[in-house]
Image (cartoon, rainbow, N blue to C red; front, side):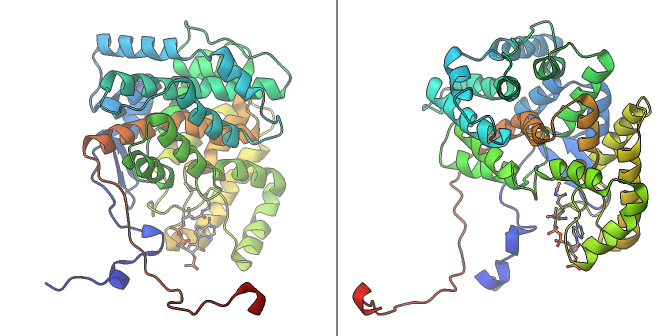
Length: 382
Ligand SMILES: CC(C)(COP(=O)(O)OP(=O)(O)OC[C@H]1O[C@@H](n2cnc3c(N)ncnc32)[C@H](O)[C@@H]1OP(=O)(O)O)[C@@H](O)C(=O)NCCC(=O)NCCS
C-alpha cells in the first residue's frame, strides 16, 4: 500500500483526524449520542451527581458508596482558598474577563502548591482535586470582589453544585436550583477531544502538572467558537428583542455569511443531545417566570434556523439553551464560560490522567508554504 502524502493527510483544523485513543467520552454525531465511560448522559443527568460523574470520568468506574463519600470529603476539604490566592484574585483588574482571571489563577495554584514529580500518584490526585474543587471558589471570589463584596466561605454541608451557587449568589439555593445546576455541570463535564481538551492533553504531553494543563484548556475554552459561544447566544437573544425580529435577523446573518451563535457543531450533525436536556430545563424554569420573551425568541430561532440550515446538519448545540438557564439562575453573562470551565475541569483532569498513562509528546507536522533560501539584505539597503 502506498503511503499517503502530507498533503493527502492534511485536514484544516485536523477535522476528523484521530489524535489519541481514549476511553473517557463517546460521541456519535450522526445519532446524537453522548456517553461518559459508556454511560449515556441522559441517565447520568437523571440519577447521578457532579461529584459522582467526576469520579467516573477520573477513575473509569462508578464509585462505591464509601469511595464516593471519601471523594466528596476530599473535594469539600479542598474548596477553601488561602489568603495568598485570595490576595492574588483581588490584585487583578475588576473589569477583566473572569476567564482570563481564571486561567491566571489556576496556573498560579501550581506556584502555591508546587507539583513537579508526576510519578507521585498521591500528589497527582491532590492537584486534580484542587483544580476541580477550587475553580468554583476562585470564580465566586472574583465575582464577589468585583461587586466590592467579601468572598463567601464554602459551606461543607452543601454539595458541589449547591455550594457553587451559594458562593456566587450569597444565599443557599433551593433543591430545584441545586439539582438543575448539578445537571448543567454534568452536561459540561466532558466532550471528548474538543479544542480545549486537546490543548489540555498537548500541554500534559510535555509533562506538565494538572494546574498548567487545565490553565491551557481554560484559555482555549474562552474563544467564541468554543465555550465563549454561550455568552454570545444570550447577548444575541437580547439584541433580537422580539419574536417577530427572528426571521429577518437570521436572513440578514445568512446573507452576510455570518455564524449564528449556539448553532452548529464540528461533530454533531443533529441536535446536540445536551441541548434537549437544557431545553427542558429552560422550559421548566421559564414556566415559573412572568416574562418568557427570551425563551420564545430562542424557540423561534431554532425553528427558523432549522428551516434554513438543517439540510447542512446545523442544529442547536449545548450553548444554545445553557445561557437561558444560567440567566434564570442569576448569573452575570460573563460567568457562563467560567462555569462551563468549572464543570469541564473533571473532564480535562480525566484526560490528563489518561495522557500520563501512555504519554507521547504531541508533535504534528506542517506543510511549509513559505519562501526558501533567500539572500539576506542589510537593513540600510532595504
Ligand atoms: C461550531 C462551528 C465552528 C462548527 O463549524 P464547522 O464544523 O467548521 O462547520 P462549517 O463552518 O464547516 O459549516 C458548514 C456550513 O454550515 C454553515 N454554518 C455552520 N455553523 C453555522 C452557524 N452557526 N450559523 C450559520 N451558518 C452556519 C457554514 O457557514 C457552512 O456553510 P457553507 O457550506 O455554505 O459554507 C460553527 O458551527 C460555529 O461557528 N457555530 C457558532 C459558534 C458556536 O455556537 N460554537 C459552540 C460550539 S459547541
